[in-house]
Image (cartoon, rainbow, N blue to C red; front, side, top):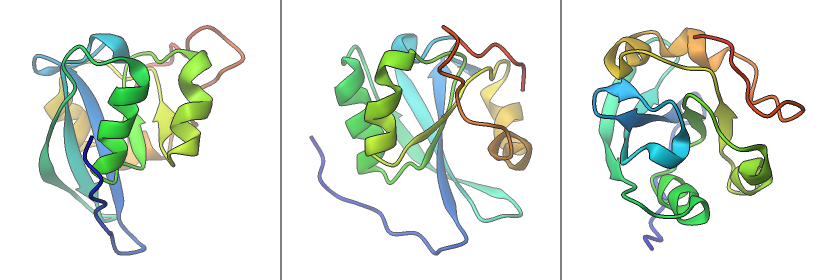
Length: 127
């Protein structure tokens, strides 16, 4: 596991988009990788790619945390793992779909969305 932490200016947010090929992964558990962006309040700058492979949830979240990810955008995320994400400082926004590139171009809108709704099995709102 990587232990490096990437420090960000206070006004920046590190965002991961879970990927299934070039699309937003419909489920975080199926994402083989995540594109990571730094959002500075006006635009998104590509930071890098995190390989998730077939790792279990705790390891996937630790990989994202090692890149300094503060927000994860994905299709769905199990509520049982939401507390672990929060402990690592990762806010989860579910209901994202479509092209990962298109989602990256409208990160500001996605970051303004409410976090995952863990009262329901999945938050299915579209972004």
